[in-house]
Image (cartoon, rainbow, N blue to C red; front, side, top):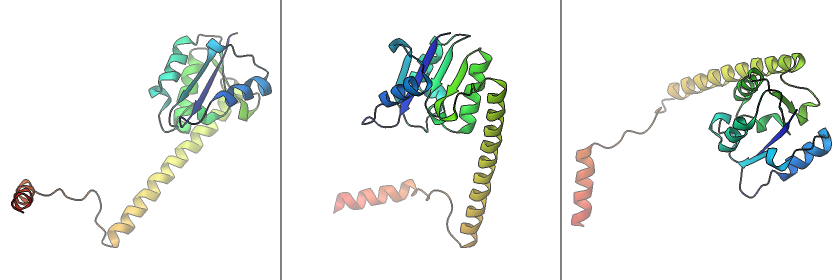
Length: 167
């Protein structure tokens, strides 16, 4: 079994080397330098849109193990994490997350954890939608204008430009 590691930081002044060190010390995995993938990218970017993560995916094969320090290193939100781990499991790749202990998220117990995460993520998404709708309804009831401000008509812009040029 080959062991791969993935680290992600959000800003250029951060480094993922502490994530590598943490994985090797606490999980006891030796991750060879050519099997360590780290990148600087916002956590808001889905895993499928990350260059470093996609390079890692190209190298992973059935029977490999992917280790990360925290679940949020894998994906943008719980739904992204769950779908990414499911894709990896379908390819026969095991996933372990240091922060969750020594649980393989592609195992039976790991799938149960993922099921719970997916349920919580769906609940979170629904609650966000409900809060957004309630906030919009309250703002509308208070007479606030919703949406973007209207753009000035082209004739209005021309008149401003003309007045500016004459001044």
